[in-house]
Length: 191
Image (cartoon, rainbow, N blue to C red; front, side):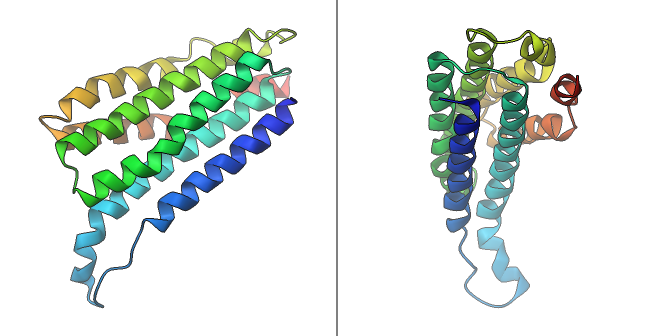
């Protein structure tokens, strides 16, 4: 399979995941501004998940742009990532419907942790794909963000059982880390 086909498939799956998440948003019952309060948790969970999915999509795009070849291992690593991302609508809906209760917030963190681990696995599979140029390893570099993110998810997930809002703040911090543009891939892609 070509890297273009893998990227197109992944783009489609991520688009479907976002569509499923937005379909979980229901309008409030009533026409007053205060009628929005009951849907606030669902909307906040959607915003967080949309942002996190957006960072996966953007980084996946950059990764595929720098990769020159895709192996069978990379295909399965990509499917592993998409599997965990596809669970995100469930976890997002659960934390929203249950107003950030401990168990749903911990499950959400677990899904994010496993997504981050799967993304790391995809990077490693691409770096070690037969025929790969060193450009991808150079672009990934030390991958500080990629190492900090799963560590933060691993810390926040058990904390959620006691302090779910602290965990939500940590999940939000991960999003903020990734929103800051990372030019590693772009620099290597231009050379």
